[in-house]
Image (cartoon, rainbow, N blue to C red; front, side, top):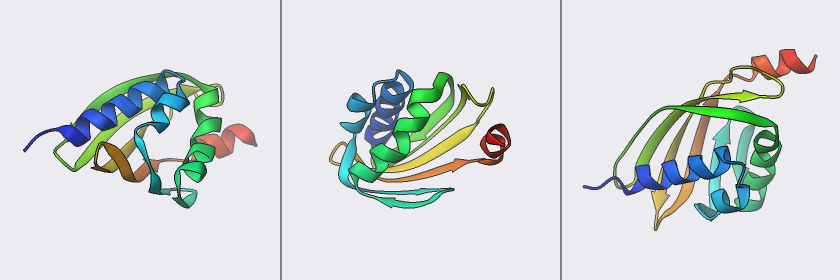
Length: 117
């Protein structure tokens, strides 16, 4: 067993938290399926559209930890954005052939709702 999925997940995390969405998308499969609090997204274009606004308002990110094996990885972190000071989240991803094919985002949308109202 190796940690290939964890390496991909961490490289992806480093890219988008470094405001390089183009690089981050190189770790995402064309047919990605993403399950997030806002609903299910299918395809790389929809995934990019989902991530772009968040990446553009990101101020900083702090990695809590990452765990994984050949096929799955879990990355947990906290983010600060222009809207909220703290937005902890986790992503559980499935990786095949060096790309993320499935992502499950877990985060609380309430701080963002409150900040926008």
